[in-house]
Image 1 (tube, rainbow, N blue to C red):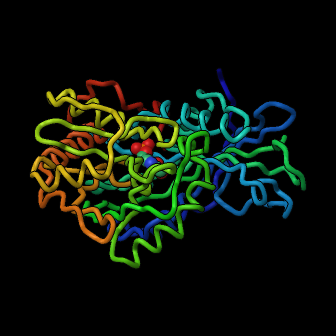
Image 2 (cartoon, rainbow, N blue to C red):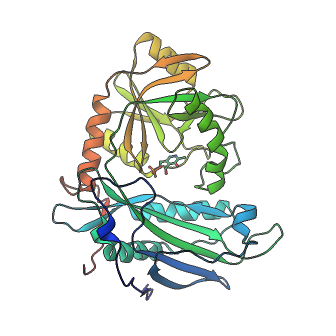
Image 3 (cartoon, rainbow, N blue to C red):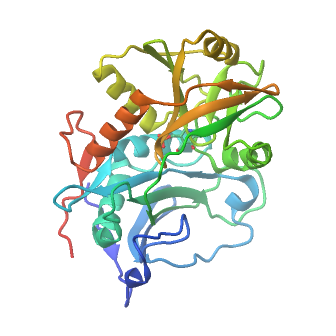
Length: 355
Ligand SMILES: Cc1ncc(COP(=O)(O)O)c(C=O)c1O
């Protein structure tokens, strides 16, 4: 469908204030944003406007009842300098899965992708050229109807912001296997990318950091023994020469990096099994030497190598090195930047004229 996205440009760009070699994390935004409104049962008025404040009524339902969901993805430049998106249709699908769970309207997938393409081609000069850098994209939807009362809102906004992100150097991380707090339970909102999931994770993450760990490793709600995922990443373990990752049981986010890494590992000849994994199994594998590697996967970092996992007052040692994780991370990054063949057909060019 042709969406007729109107574009109103800034008078003066802020781009010359940005030092690409020193990009502050998460606080720099490009000149424009994409906005679309949901009214009377349909998405209307798709537009690109200067980045700025959005007037919000204090009774906007997202502020009270939490109907707010988001996505996270990145745009890259290929070797010819053309902007490319990594599997954006997957983010569109996941946004709608989150919307379904939170009683919010679906957004047409082609509108999601078209909005991204328009914004990214308009802001292509903001895509950092440095190796490992990218333009982070944050599509999100929230209920902006002013109403006090518990029901699904009838008015929503869908917005895409863009924020340049510097190179992420994957240091080896330490996880804290959490037994007191939980992230997701059967029938809950774990597989949705709902803002509330992250709100509930903030305090446990701060407590884990205070103990000297980088992120929380979430365990299941009922028995605190099955591994779910890491703060903002899915998790993989290499046991001898095979990989395992927790199955998607409704409590785990269906990560786009996760599904891509599964494909890359299989393509490299590894067996990858999605199944239930207990923390005790990993503890045993560490003790008997069969635990060779573990890593987290997510848009922000690609692959983050895990060094140890704090569990019940002890540390489960994983490994000092992650040769396969490093190799797969490099391959993923080379596909995203067009350095090697995109044999899976993951990359989407914006195909717009670049100013
Ligand atoms: C809770 C959670 N799990 C996993 C992921 C990884 O998902 P993706 O690979 O799509 O970035 C993320 C990041 O979006 C996340 O927030």
